[in-house]
Image (cartoon, rainbow, N blue to C red; front, side):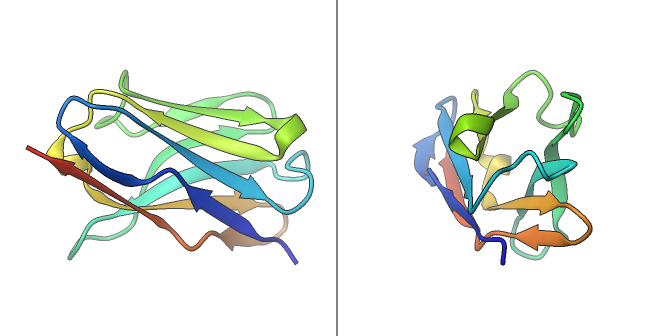
Length: 114
């Protein structure tokens, strides 16, 4: 059973930074895809950033140049460094991992005040 546990969310002022962590139960080498999604109230869940097993990364246009996804295979953890945060980044952020099946964490709230 795969478990993903997110942490690092919180309240921050616009222009500030947060780093989200997603700790997996077991090796993350097995996941061909790991990503961060977010869902704001009344909006659909959207992909923010992703990392594949080949080292490639992809970002939503709205976060390019501000967010960085990274993997620490030794710690079985994926990070999302978020800089220059804006109020529109406010959402619940979810970690996702895929390896023959899709797995989700419980989410962590990020609130950016103006």
